[in-house]
Amino acid sequence: MQRRKILEYVLAGLMVLAAVGAWWSVDRAVNIQAASSWLVPTLWFSLMFMVLFLQVIISQSAVIWWSSLAVAFGASLLFAFSGMHVLWVIVGGLLVVWGCRKAKVLIDSSIKLNIAGAARAGALMVTLGLSIVITSEYYVLIKSNPSGRVIPKVQVGNLARAVVTPVLTHFSPQRGKEGQDVTVDELLLMLQQNGMKQFELPSFDETQVNALVGGEASPKIPASQQAAVDRLMAESQAQALEQANQAVLAEGRKKLGELAGREVTGMEKVADVFADIVTHKVNDYFSPGMAKGQDVSSLTFVLTFIVFATVLSIGSFLDFFLVHLTHLAFFLLTKGGAVRVAKVMKEVEVIE
Picture 1 (tube, rainbow, N blue to C red):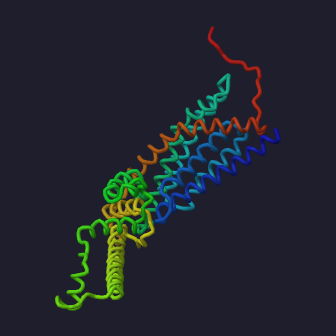
Picture 2: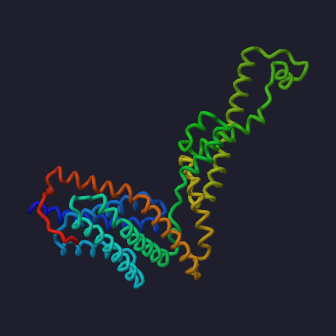
Picture 3: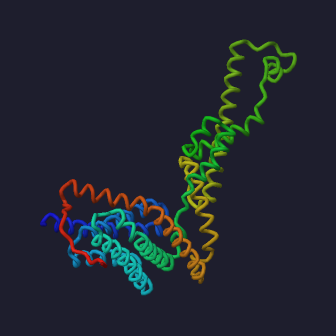
């Protein structure tokens, strides 16, 4: 019994930690351009989902459970505080409680423990409640900081590969296979080399060199001087090519930087820059006047609804995996001796 009580406190602390990390990741996704928009928040909220249902299944103390839940959802107000957000936090919290209640009823009424089934019964309401609070926090952050990211960074890895790979394959089949591993400078140089093939410098034979140096009646240049002339011409050609490459790289980086809305050094992956370009263009389209303080509340509301639909869709997709991960976590706790499953006599009402 003492071990189970300790586990309840551990789960409560883990619940609060996961919630703070989740709300903090949403704040970073909006206000910090380099922050992860989907992966890190998804990991935090997945942990929060699993711990929440483990608490429902294991916790016997209503005080501990309600306290951890209140602190976990109230932590969102530390990052985005407004009267409307408080209301949505309450609404989202009630939906989560509803989902947890459904899971608890199923656990208590079942003859045989069905952890996955209980979590599945409340997963929809929990996902909906979390999605509402996430979206509300996002809306408040965007309204209070219009210079932040209007929409989360677009992750277009597959799209970038689909666009970049055919281009690279056209110029270099080997580099085309590497896809997203090609850097900006490498792509620009491939484009430059392909263009230079159409404008190769003319080659000169010995007679033409003699004529250029001393005229048609000039005697034949000695072999030692001929080698020096060849070396000089090769060095001049290499220097001209290097200067052309540097000019192409500088101009290409500048143009891509303007499209992506940030400085491009040339060492970035082509797919990453492509994703930045897409995100920058979408942000430019949706937020033409936010930095100037213009009223764009209706547009922000539309974007918020899009984010809500996206978050809810991702959450609904992940529910299946998280439910089974919760079951696995409970199984590991029983194997480790943290909790024990016992069989007891139970009276039930039946209709005769």
